[in-house]
Amino acid sequence: MNRKDLLLSWYETLYASLGPSGWWPGESAFEIAVGAILTQNTNWTNAGKAITQLRLHNLLQPEKMDQLSSEELALFIRPAGYFRVKAARLKNLLFFLNAECNYDLSILKKMDTSRLRLKLLEIKGIGPETADSILLYALDKPSFVVDAYTKRILNRHALVHEDIHYHELRDFFMDHLPEDATLYNEYHALLVRAGKTWCAKKNPHCVKCPLQLYL
DNA sequence: TGCCAGGCCGGGT
DNA sequence: ACCCGGCATGGC
Image (tube, rainbow, N blue to C red; front, side, top):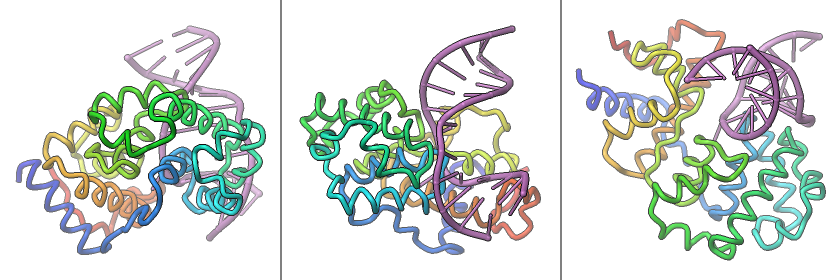
């Protein structure tokens, strides 16, 4: 089987096994971008607690949040961990949003995807995964998100080398899948859920994994 | 109890 | 270019 067909059949298999993920539904683009930073190297339960605190204090609007100092903001997001660095990263994002679109994220949706991606990567604290998460989940743009689970699953199935770089793995998906934000959205979510279910670090054999080996 | 979670940055080699 | 320590909370 070629890579195109394999990636599509994997998608079908994961979807049949796990069902729809429904990631980040019914939320504002800004809230999703904030979540993308808060969940860096952090489980979503903790990031979600920080989001709840922000919502309780009406801070999930960029104009409001930007009125706080980094130190003040940090107090609201403690459950997310790394709260001081993440507060600084949120302020960096807000500085960008103010300068780029006057806090109006709908303007970002009209921008060219690859050009916007480069601008996001210039923000200190936003690396490739966070940038792609914002593009895909907040702005509905077809930018595939790669993460630790993605790499681990493909490596354990002998599809890629263990030390493959982020952009190589991203290209691997984007070169072999149709350019479709809805597909990328669900595919990444399924890979993360599959990783939690069958491909934990301490579970090297993936015994019950429904994906087939590609040798 | 120690290990891990949907990373990223900065400094050293 | 690669490697490593730092950043921090909460759940199991």
